[in-house]
Image 1 (tube, rainbow, N blue to C red):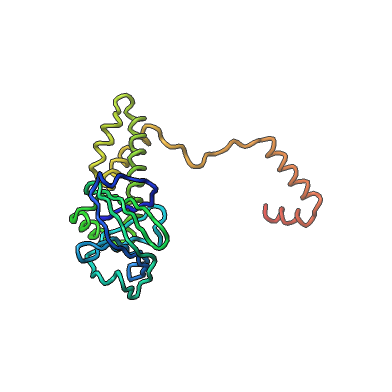
Image 2 (cartoon, rainbow, N blue to C red):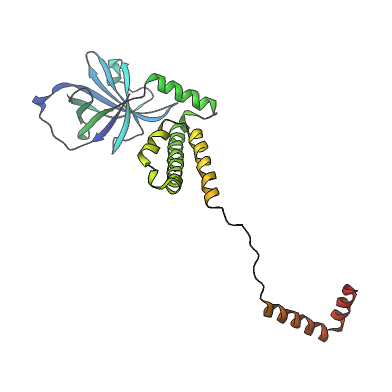
Length: 245
């Protein structure tokens, strides 16, 4: 489960939502998983909060919920660098959205936090198993998924284009795409090869190379030019006669 955090200038009516108050601290840290910000909030004797990718709250950033931490982190920094601290007001707007006002050393910042739907554990397991089977890393997952979606789209569009040409008015694109949606990419390619064979049978491809008609007049002129060279060069004439004999 992760959240999108966006700095905003929106104002809300505090009386309309449940409000929590307390102290906060914003730490900059770099661990084995890379650079990040730790935004921690005081509540009920412990610290809750977010791990935020990167070193900025500017724009839209991705954050994951952190486990509970000791309240002492409000006063100590360890190997992290303190970016800001102060007090906060958090307005919960349902279960999947909140507004957070940070009253820190650099003034007031307002964040809008929206919870994004996460992947089911079984889906995560299947993705990780597929990556291992193909000797890919989790860092490659997003790129490979994007490549797979693009490959499916190209194969589907090509198949539909061939089917439209071959089947004419009988072709229904919506039905075709629905039938392909449940297939693996390999199965789509198998059907595509079948349509390509039908298309080639209906419209045989032209030969890669075709004989061209010779210009007889130009050919005679080239022969005359060659004979003129031989007449003017005795050495070339001897070579020509020797090769001819």
